[in-house]
Length: 174
Image (cartoon, rainbow, N blue to C red):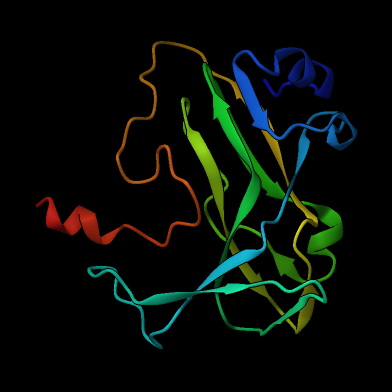
């Protein structure tokens, strides 16, 4: 079951933490999250799943930043979230998608017990100017049934900013 907006608001400060929280961003069954002013871009033309790929940080200036098609940008939400006993999910806002901007390519599914900022996989189909602070995506919550263990992976839990892929760590553990 997906929580209603009213239920999300009722649970803020309990099993749902969104910081900062602004009631005006609450939707009928989701909450809008904003884009931070920092992005990461990879430096290498060919990315390798088995290694820590080089990347650098760029800032979105007040006048906005034009994103290039066919390039992956990693961003993050302004908001820190925590979830207990619920499965958080992330989707791009339809108004953003209608401009050809994909906010998360594959990672919209969160784990029960996740704590941190959401890293956004941003990709555009044509050049687009983006701005820090734009309400770029929405978080919603599914109830979970049955016994479960909270997310505890050291990869992305309790992050403090944008995280590039840490898939290479899976190969180090073998």
